[in-house]
Length: 307
Image (cartoon, rainbow, N blue to C red; front, top):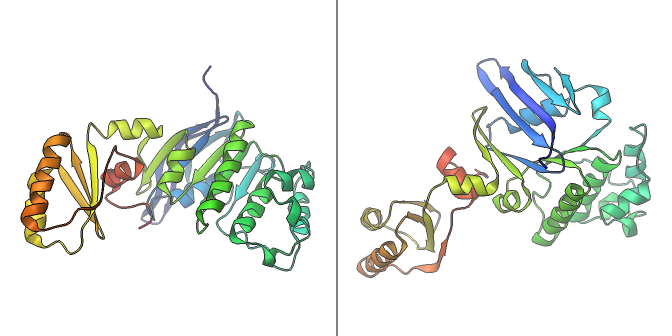
């Protein structure tokens, strides 16, 4: 049975003078799913989120959330939403329990604080000052503050930026648990592997418009039959780069990493090895893989997500 849409956006528009921050976008996020917005800086992600969170009003368009059609997000709707901002800005000399008590006071029917602390694995830190928490613990506290009203729709704006791999995985586990409990999550992230691991649906924005959307698998399959070959090589001269063009369908360079696209892997590998010998270039850290969301994003926008 197909999941119903908890949130629908139709022809949403927000302009700032001549800047078309959001230029007529439409999408929907289904119940019990992770919907991810991807886009380079200036793509319109932040403006879109701020409209959906009730921080800004759109110039035009329609939002349908919880089966109610709205021109802007109302206070009643906000009672059923949770929002994690990029910087929680918690008072460093408050205790964790005090922060949670403060946020609980904003809502009519908050979840018991101990229950939320358990959900974000901070029970043993309830009496600790915010200033003593690690980066991962502070982010889990921010997630807890977003969950204190038991929201049905949760906005997570870059929830793992700056965290170490273990702390990032802890946040992933919380997100997966929320989805399993029937919550709908609107996610933005600067990590492609995070989008691939968590997302049920990905929407790519650029210059205020949607340029692609679908499941991660659909987006990578739409990329074509290409196989990707990656290797590291330092200081490739113009002659070596020109010769490399004849080895594959296309390639790109990011620092010392070369990524090649091919539809004929055996032939390309043979040409690449011959090129390596002729140009006296060592192929370090050579890997062969299928296209991922990073490849799709680059092909559509010409930019990496974190540029």
